[in-house]
Length: 371
View 1 (cartoon, rainbow, N blue to C red):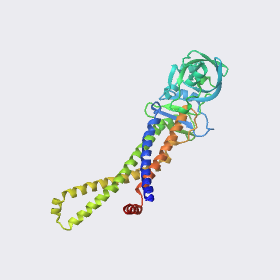
View 2: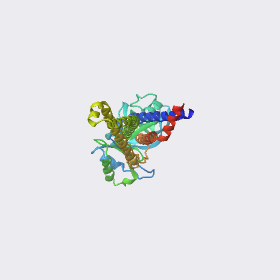
View 3: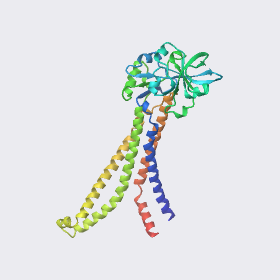
View 4: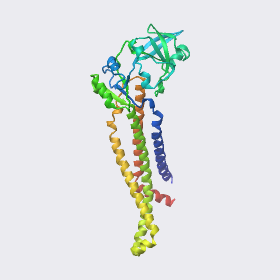
């Protein structure tokens, strides 16, 4: 009797785990969606020692036909009032907040004109503003950065989708004031949904080798995660259909046997007239059996095809980028890979349930009958 309960509990655990996997796969994409980045394409190197891109060329292409921005990160000492420490210094252009969708807490971001005229403006994120001045209402204050005086132009909320970097002190300055003016990676924002073809055409115009860079489309990664959720839902529907298929098949076999017995004693006309309910019930069950079998077969083949194409998913290529957007892209990749693993586990889970040995089921029935 203990063996029976273990097997029954094992099947129950499989069904409960399948339901749990489906719920997780359906809810994950909703937690990571970043609407302001749905048209962004991140062009990032696949190796640390990849050649840098010409910042001057990027600025010439910025605005036609799409916005371009980037970050050149370094570490620098900063002093203001009576406090001083090292911060993450980010040199960028005036298009940066329009691409990332980061909200200005106070003040404004520097413009293209400020950038060209090399005005010493600085934009602090919330963490840096609070640590240096104790407030976010600090526009017009001055600070010393790398031995030079800068005027605080505004405070930006730059956590975005990367929650792990919220407390990092960051200061943004115009790229024309940075020691290094050529970024390793950059962002483009298309007028319509992001397309890697546009990004690759732009990159080729910079006369750089395309092979050394990954073209990461936020729209495509969200589409992939949505496809995984739909696949999980279909696998669940196929599993439930297969479960019902077994239940319906038993009644179908019983009705079919009864019909064969009656057919041996009655004419077809009398059988149709007197056993109409039996025939209708048998027809409905036959239709349900056929529909369930086709659904299970279709989903099985579709899942196999979808899993086989995972290694061709370009959006899961390696990304070497330490910007907030790059870190968020890496997080999305990790979540997408996790969803792939969970989908494979869900598929395997239902296979175990559906391919159970009939002999084992008969043994369980006999043990239950004896007990």
